[in-house]
Length: 141
Image 1 (cartoon, rainbow, N blue to C red):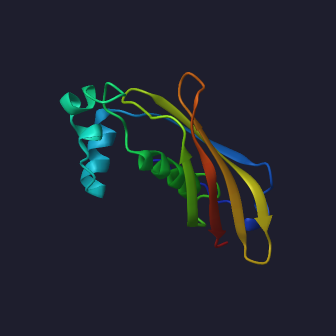
Image 2 (cartoon, rainbow, N blue to C red):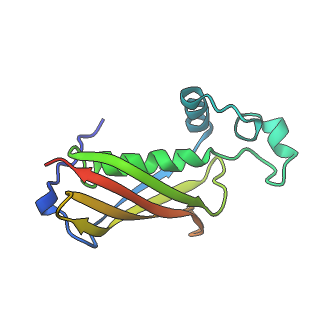
Image 3 (tube, helix red, strand yellow):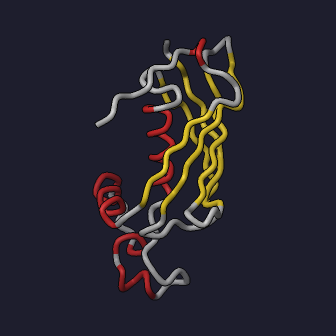
C-alpha cells in the first residue's frame, strides 16, 4: 500500500493534475458488486451479457467513480481531502480488460471555502473518452 500525498490548500494550483491508470478486471467488478450489492447481470453474468448489445460484461459505472475518489484521497490533494461531490457522465462502457486512464485537474480554487473544483476525464486504452465530469473537494489543511 502506498502512502497518500499530503498537499495543503496553499500548495494547490489551478491546472495542477493527477492521473490514475488501472486495468479493470473481473475481480474489480466482483468486488464492487459485493461492496455495493449491485449484481446486475450485465456486470456479473457472462451468459446474460453476451445477449446484450455490448456482447460481454460491462464494468459498473461507479467503478470509475471510485477511481476519482482514489485520485482525490491519494493524490490531489491526498490525505487532507474530503470529497464533497462528484458528477460523471458515462460516455462509453468500460469492459473487463480495459485499461482506464482517469485524470483530475484543478479547475478552480475557492479561498473562502477552502475547496477545489476538479475537472475529470477518463479514457480507455484506445484513447476513447469513457467518462467526464467534475468533483468538489474540501481541503482540510
